[in-house]
Image 1 (cartoon, rainbow, N blue to C red):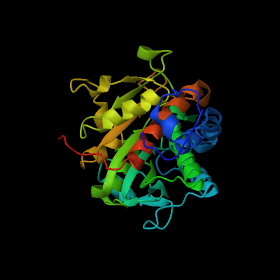
Image 2 (cartoon, rainbow, N blue to C red):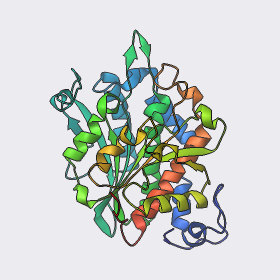
Image 3 (cartoon, one colour):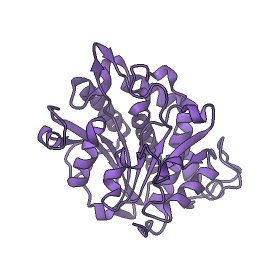
Length: 335
């Protein structure tokens, strides 16, 4: 991992003392420690509360969740992209309707941005959708895992990078924290962004997409694991970098089941990263599996494993840190 300082006799739970980051990057360790289970829990209890009414695309509840997120970024001092002019990228109802979105109202992607210190024109995207399926027959579908967990993970990772920047160790490449809408209805928010990118897709290094990382599935019950999907589809380097980041941090079991082209779930094509991948941007999709509360009103905050959520968020952060700070951007060498 990239060296950004000097650390002596410094360690973090889950990081080997012999790892390159511990030996060479006090900045990394300090930022890494900003990602905390209790902070993830605090934010998720708001994002996935009944007040948000299941965060259906364009609904008042989703807009309330969005306001909470925007205020979070404002309080951290993380701005929006200057070219956008606000934290909101409008996703018009007409755009969604033409793609099967029925009568959905206008909605918004939410974007926060940390400019890189050396290669600001190169963009690392960390994404997750903040919509869910709303309220049905008077019952709120809170979507704590789907994708409340990914939403708060993106927020927490942003906090870690901002802490590093305030300490004088900001990322060399720029980082876009992209909360997309309309995923549940057809990946609409991410498609709108890639059709109308705030930053050129040719300058976009990678999309690390987080969609459900707070639970376990029956196949992996009780394990310290995460599914990683698509990390070697377009770049021979991304999977290697993610595995190195994993080994030097929490050493989760990385499960590549869904990379099998014969897998019937076809998850590579079913979350927001795919709209980047089809534009030749390397992606890695972090996912906990399809559990018994998937798309049910029982996907609640009480069932989240916050320690495991934190470990998975730390893995995405460590991967993003390397991608943002390594001398050369990763190559696109596969089709």
